[in-house]
Length: 154
Image 1 (spheres, rainbow, N blue to C red):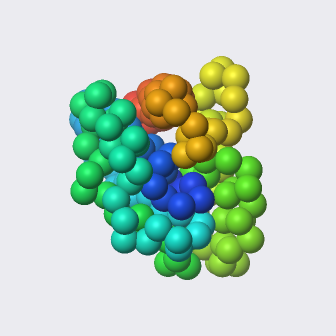
Image 2: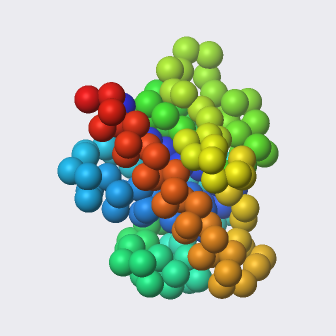
Image 3: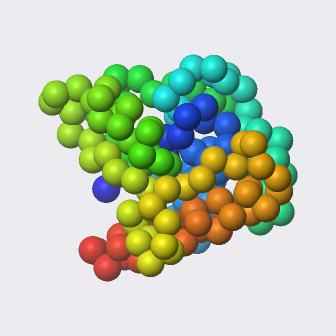
């Protein structure tokens, strides 16, 4: 595996946070994998992540300020080995958009950590601080499992 794309709706909460969490976990494990994030809608294109995502990420030593929202484009399906959707709605949209000959594997992110007990990463946008913390916990669990899988495959 050489590259991963994380996808949510607007690319300002869950997917940029996933990018930061996974980057941190991979770096700590000494693994190099290209990471990016995107949204299925262009509404926030060019904007930084939500200030709450930045704040709660910073509390855990993660930097999100430099990230900018963008929409998924057709070349993403050829550029990335794995594309992880945060929820079923975005998974369905990605599957609808995937070009016929694209090799990217598209799956729910929490399929990495089935023991966590949730299939989808909930959108914290309309909630409070607790929602952002919960998302960080979920993403960390999934990132840890992915690192373990990569190391076991080597």
